[in-house]
Image (tube, rainbow, N blue to C red):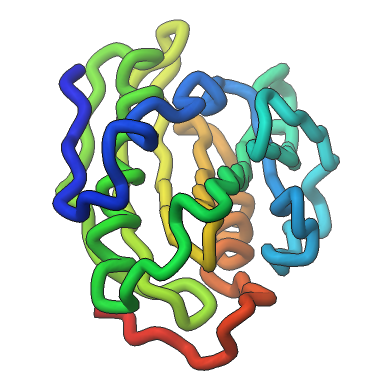
Length: 199
């Protein structure tokens, strides 16, 4: 898969290679580290976790899963943070949505490579916690099982945050809705108190 170049020079080649392999078939949710209080998210009460991992410098994952009744498979809620430090300082508010979408499409490439019959909808713009964000839905097969998911991405201060929920065709509808609600209700303890416009 060809990586999507960033329009903004400050998001140059040094940001092109991210931990895409983090998006695996397991279920995960995350809080930012360093700055563990950056992402304020409440997982659904019936999800188990967190399962935490720090696969590289500035990257952190926490995971919550809820087992599908009568199955060894789970519904996923994952949040991953990538702290780029000074490399993302001073990004104009007007460019946050574009930056979030570029990162989102790179992260989505990791899902695509792990799925058969993969299809993704056109990404859309939204807001999370008052910050411009990008969102995309996808479908595919994993180990012969039909799956679908929703991924979001947002840039808060110097941290890129990815939210991902995925499940199988037999995942309880209420679990999928609860995971989406947790993502859409997220707030951030940003250094900048003024909310950004979603567009």
